[in-house]
Image (cartoon, rainbow, N blue to C red):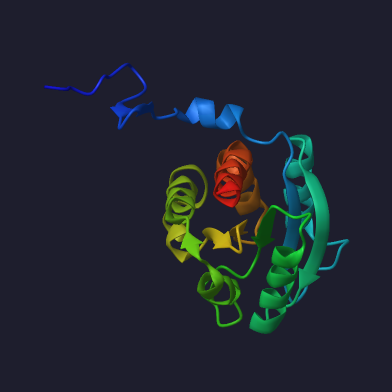
Length: 190
């Protein structure tokens, strides 16, 4: 009778040891090339505090901002900006802020989710939980933050408030971005 070997972090499965999260992160790239998109009918480069915050968080963690733009709350414009990022071989991840609420002009989620080949539901779930416990309380139910994969690029959509961007970047995106890209690049090698 053959019993699986178990040590504190890994279970022996089919002849190989499953890698731990720590081991995965060691294989992650040091730098991720990103596109930042602010979705807003009113913001300009001078008034785009949330886009600036996203870029600062990325740069502080050693990531490169390859492209940045502000687009109107229009489905076609949002999709065009995202798909241009997906077609750019220099870009690994696309980060959007704005347009994730429930108002009629909030169409970021309707624009990107149909493009996802895979969803990353944990991002939105944990973002709303953190928003509830650490930031805005029950108003967290109004957030439709989402993440997924489009053409092997990681795509994250956060609310447009600077508090929401700070929370998403500090607690979720920056800590896991390189690991996410490692997983996507692994698929490209096959």
